[in-house]
Amino acid sequence: MPEYNTLDDLEDGQRVLVRLDLNSPVEDGEVQDNNRFDRYSETVAALADADHKVVLMAHQGRPGRDDFVSLQQHADILAEHVGKPVEFVADTFGEDAIAAIESLEAGEILLLENTRMTDDELPEKDPEEHADSEFVKTLAPHFDAYVNDAYSAAHRAHASTVGFPLVLPAYAGLVMEREYEYNTSVANKEFDGPVTMVCGGNKSEDVISVVNNLGGKVDNFLLGGLPGELFRRAQGYPVGHDLEGMDLLDGQWDETKDTLEDLVENRLDEFGLPVDFAYEGDDGDRAEIALEDIEEKEDAYLDIGHDTIEDYLPYIEESDAVFVKGAVGVFEDERFADGTVELISAIAESDCFSVIGGGDTARTLDLYDIDEDEFDHVSIAGGAYLNALTGKELVAVEVLKANA
Ligand SMILES: Nc1ncnc2c1ncn2[C@@H]1O[C@H](COP(=O)(O)OP(=O)(O)OP(=O)(O)O)[C@@H](O)[C@H]1O
Ligand SMILES: O=C(O)[C@H](O)COP(=O)(O)O
Image 1 (cartoon, protein in one colour):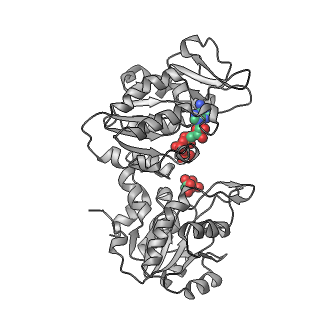
Image 2 (cartoon, helix red, strand yellow):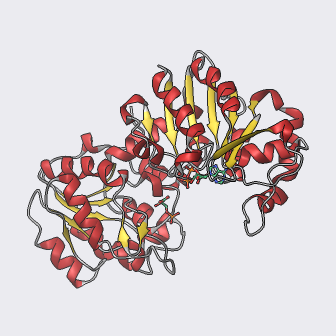
Image 3 (cartoon, protein in one colour):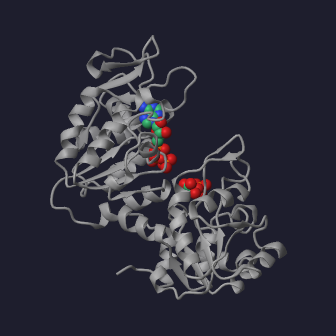
């Protein structure tokens, strides 16, 4: 029984305001199609098919950054995925927006302008304060219901995520429902056999947070990416140093050194750590070096090596549940994708319960043609996925629950 209202509780034929998370990569001003559009098209189509007047809100980028652009292109991309027109109005809650909302017929879809283009959306505030903003007070009377499907923005207390559910009957959308159920499963579900988590990426803080919060739930943490190097550095190996002109590892080392040293001293039996690394050889090809042969760091290590992959595979094969947080190498470059692709493929082949995240890592499936259906869940969230894994509440989900 869900702890919040879902689309099953929503009567047909209403005026529905829907919060999506269409935040996407923008390259040279062009919004890049990605799996968020595909996922959201299901919710949007379901609402349109139920004869609702469907008005969508979403954000793109952050003010001051290059990716802070209009949602005009998002409307066109979404329309392709939904298979129906998606109107766009370049206004958030002014006269043009209201006119466009009021002229909508049952089953039609309208996307409003980037929510972060109104000052009322940011910064983080209490739901009550957001509910009292002009943005919420102006738009809400034009609707019968609010649907939040923006799971990946559910850790943000913004007007569009926490203000509207205080003044309108609120429902979780299809993406929200599925993400919430699966991403909290490592914290809330019981598994009969071993539970393994593959942790990589480029943020050691994220991995420390996962390791500290899930010690009792996860039996094996298989480490790669930057955290893999820094855990080895904490044991005294000369890895995890920045090369000239880079600033990824040494800064993180300064911030996390004490915690990492404590973890490798006291909880070593929970960790799988790299025994070899891949780097770019003189000819530009992938080269590998064993940890024990590294005398002094001379190269940037961009993937776990094949001996490490072989060490890790049995853990995956023997687990009842496997979760992924972060890629174990720079998978965007084919030369350094072996670790990530081989581990994720092994999860796909196993019949264990499996969840793949976060935002960057899920792209591996698209890039290397790995079928999403092989996993129980592939998350499209980054920060919200991390919060859910580590048992932290998501403010927008809590507001939905309070409104149920
Ligand atoms: N050894 C490495 N050196 C540098 N970058 C690495 C290394 N291993 C993995 N990465 C990079 O880490 C990135 C993914 O890291 P991140 O921690 O952001 O994971 P994520 O959870 O998938 O994403 P997000 O939290 O942004 O949603 C990838 O883009 C990958 O290229
Ligand atoms: O893409 C995301 O992870 C979400 O949309 C959150 O974006 P934000 O970190 O800019 O709030």
